[in-house]
Structure formats: structure tokens, C-alpha cells
Length: 162
Image 1: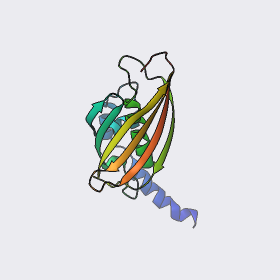
Image 2 (image 1 turned 120 degrees about the horizontal axis):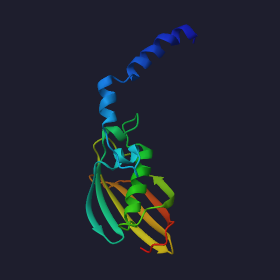
Image 3 (image 1 turned 180 degrees about the vertical axis):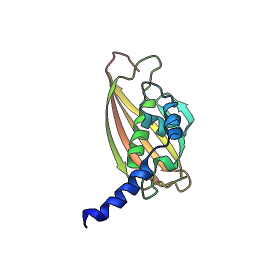
Image 4 (image 1 turned 120 degrees about the vertical axis):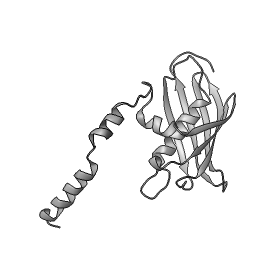
């Protein structure tokens, strides 16, 4: 393909991606907690906590358009963020910083589509010193199909006990 034929397409793409003044101002007014990334905020908004017990959490999450890939499936990165966030919730201790390093192993089993309602279950597997392990399961509520499962390991750098 010749370079001259790419120029109009490139200009069209640039125009399409330009941000208006109103859009820029709207984004600049958004406020996010300083300890969370904008991506975490986009994923976690929409999680509904259904049940909490010590070391066990059940949530519901409806797949929004903002977290789908080009094929209309829940993006793998969004699944990884859900495993990270919901998994960490089972080892959360109030008033203790979550200074942790994370190791995750995720098996992607099936696709979740736009507007699918998922049940996310997280269970703390155990703790040895400052090292904790969790298991997270994402399941389609309507069909029962397993979307993903993950093992999540956390290391708390402070000397707190869970």
C-alpha cells in the first residue's frame, strides 16, 4: 500500500480521537482516591457485595460496555483486576495498609458477554506469617458457566496478623 493512500485514513483517525474541550473538562473534574488507579475505579464501580464472612466474599458484577474487548467479551485485563480486588478483600484488615506484592494465576475458561451478570466468589485459603492465599471464581449467574478461576497470593509487608 502506498503512503499517499494512508494519509487520509490517518487524518480521519486523528479527528475521531480528538477530545473536545467539554470532554477534557469533564474528565479533569473526576476525583479518584489516591491509592487507586483510574483503571481500578472503572472496574470496581459496578461490583455489588452480596455476602461477607471472615475469609469469604460473594459479589455480583454486570459486564459493562467500558470493560469489553473488540469481540464484546469481558476483557482479560478486567478479569485479572476483579480477581486481584475481590481476592484481596478476603485478607483485608481495616486500618492496616495493604502494602503487598501479588502473584496471580488465572485460568480463563469461557467468555462473559456484555450485560452478563457474574457471581464472583473469593475464599481465603490460608495464611502463613504474612503470606496469604485466596481462590477466586467468576461464574455466569444465568448459565452457571465458569468464566475464570484464579489463585491469588499476597504478601503483607507490615507485621500485622489477619
